[in-house]
Length: 456
Image (cartoon, rainbow, N blue to C red; front, side, top):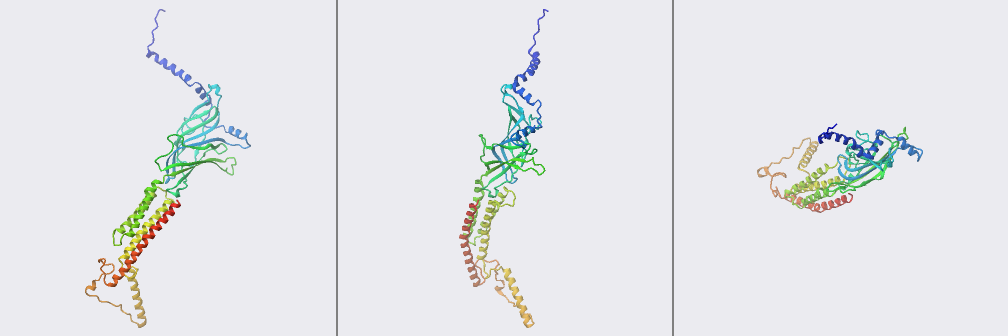
């Protein structure tokens, strides 16, 4: 009509452009993947699995029904921690499952040659709110923490023939019945992990090994360094628990992974065993210290307390159990010799200063004299009819305060020559005991230690 059309400004055109892009982009971007995803999941129920398909496939090879085979494989990346006291381990792994889902089959030629599709599995299970497909409920039976929380969520890779491969990184935290702890600290700890379906028997799901069932390492960050435990070896085997008497078709197949950890024994050798051996040898020097030296007892007590302290430190690293470990035997052995050194020193010092003729303590000698005196009175009274008074002795002058065996006096302060001769005799006995102990105790200690090290 003779009017010029007014051009829209860029700001006025932006809503139209955005609307066109929002409606056209999904079709252009998704392409074959979007069409395939829509076709596969249109009537897909992630809460169930068509078990009859698995039974028909099994009956094609034999007369009995059998469950869906789920291949399992674990890549052991590294050992995170081993808690012996609480019977728990923590390992970083790549956990892998592979199975066949007949509802996820397509003709690749109809979707631009697309042979693989990634579908999301969230919350660690196909029953999760965000999951797109069904997954088998393979569970660690002796778990300390659920695999749904310890493993990461990840996409499952689906092939055009219906094969689903689901790999997840994360942690496995089993509760272990440790084997081999009796050799501590030279032990190899064994822990068995048991995997199987918790809800479905072998009639529905059957876990089997994926190739060997496991692998170790495979990346630059795998393995351990500067830590106490390392992965020594792994084995995997299949096991089937028999069905209940009233349900003969439902057996319970599982996969058993036996994991062996190697402990770093060098820190225990340097910090505890070698130190205790050195302290025991230092304790043996008591045999060369003269009895009149007061530090002899102090040296023996120090060696004994060091053995007790070492035992307390190691006890905190082990569970309170009835089983006896190698280190417990070594600790008792070391403690016994430290105690023997202290006892020998006490005996030698006591003999070195002894002035009486008998080895009996003074209290027992006094009781023996009193018993003899009472018995003599009774004998006399029986024969004469009168009790004989105990003989009395008057002591006057300097003799009234004559020192007894345990009175305070100098080392050479003797009451008479006979007492001096007795002390000289006991000193010779004390020196002889020291001389024998100086050779016998260290040699027997060396033999016992060699026997302990031979059976570690």
